[in-house]
Amino acid sequence: MILIVCIDDRKGMMFNQRRQSQDKILREDMINQCRNGKLYMNEYSFSMFGECTDAVIIAAEDFLNQAGENDYCFVENQEISGYLVDINKIILYHWNRRYPADTYFNIDVTDGNWKRETSEIFTGSSHDKITREVYKKIK
Picture (cartoon, rainbow, N blue to C red):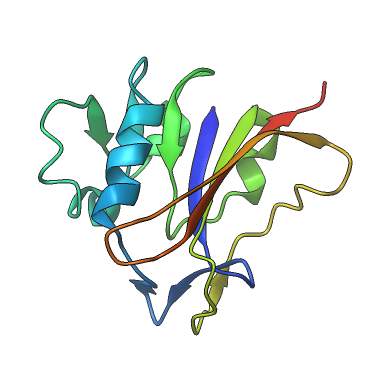
């Protein structure tokens, strides 16, 4: 699967069971990254994608179990370490800010098992700077 995660500068994902932030331009970019596939997520995440009517989005609580090898999975509030063997690519969006957090992204993309393929900075609707990095698993 291809994992998609939004993190702050300390790898924070959520605080007090809420997403740290959301950005309309980031969601549009995410949909564009997934143009040739299905995008899986849970109902909590799906609630902010109401304006994305042209995308193939599948919302299910067990979406990490449903997704295939080339499917995209947007993760905000799930434990993902048990799915590490199934992840072949990671798309990280960095807010480039420090927010309070109590849920963190726990995959170390610098551990030698991942290679950064691309890195791009763009301006979001609520953030002056958002960085998208794509990492591919080294076989």
